[in-house]
Image 1 (cartoon, rainbow, N blue to C red):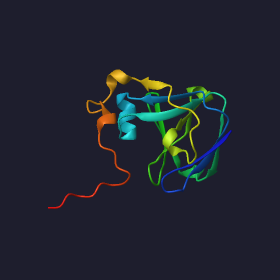
Image 2 (cartoon, rainbow, N blue to C red):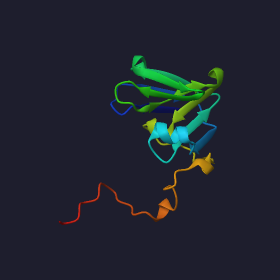
Image 3 (cartoon, rainbow, N blue to C red):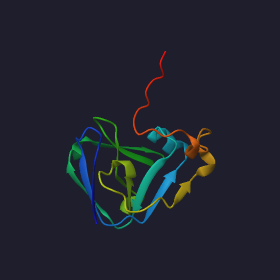
Image 4 (cartoon, rainbow, N blue to C red):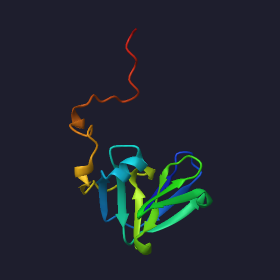
Length: 135
């Protein structure tokens, strides 16, 4: 299978050839910080190949004691990276421009989740930005 992805500004484009073995939603403090959200959503593969199609010179990688994040230097979007001495490809699920064929395998570091990350299925759902109420 071939998966394609880009950063938000379109400067960086990539493709992944192969299959993902795992899909985790990580709630650790570092993933919450670097995603700016309740959790990071990452796909993992020990066999897939990453190929940069455009903008590889704009890819930056930050390593905080083994917590690795790659991103576009122009827009800051999360991008794939190689970890574990070159044996593990980590792809932020939201960076893909195609459907993800697998469902998350689970939540990890769930004990570290944000205090507001509960019963989110009960929060109102909007198809677009909600309209402001009349003043």
